[in-house]
Image (tube, rainbow, N blue to C red; front, side):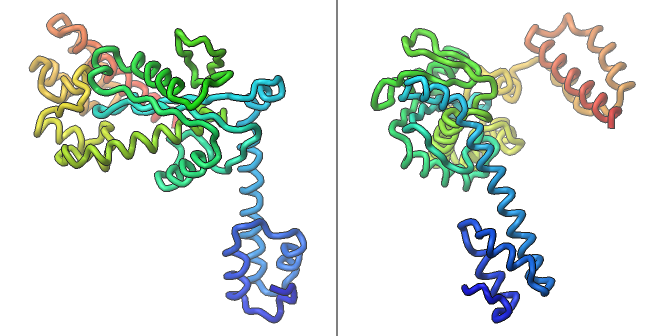
Length: 323
């Protein structure tokens, strides 16, 4: 569009400029800003905000590549970021991914997979697969999760993901943990899926892979709603477990599964129902005294669960008082 904006209506200008994916030139922005029409100046404000957001996003992604750049500059070229997803769900496998990029990749939007909408995760996963020079996936099934415990299963999944890369990496970047037994140098990065580009990319690949697996498992197990809840502990999923019992892909070693299936004592369930109705510091204090009087009748795991409920309610009361 020629920059003689007076020849065009506000609606034509809006359709032209706001539909552009590329950044608007400073010259075009100045012309929009100087237009006498209020509608055009509003378009200018929208474009200005969009440019500021784009700049912030570029700076965020640049900062996420800091650790990789240190390694690349020191001659370490094949860097794999690895992360696992599916630690918390009540059902389904645990999935990890390892991703290796060529030096200096740049993909806007890459972030911790938990922060991204499903549509954005899918789009980014496709771009990551196109840009990466290597991707490995590691799965640990429910039987192994129940046998090992979920923490060790997560480490095993990441180990398998690294071993499934097309070639051996020179260095591993991991989210606040290490994989024992590997001869590859490793760096554990606190909150790595939020601040490290390669780890965040791995979390996106792992999350989209696991989500797809859970959608496929919805077919043989339609009563649990896996396509919607992905195996996580939603109210819908809890009710389905209580109604139908756990399936073969539920993590039966999880104490919450056992709780939902009625494997605890009648006293525990009575106390839990009371605890769920607590609504004040005075009520919590009275409940604690009751709990102390009967705690010897509860199993160790039942006592732990009641204590966790009490701690959660005390935190909630304290937060409400601060507000």
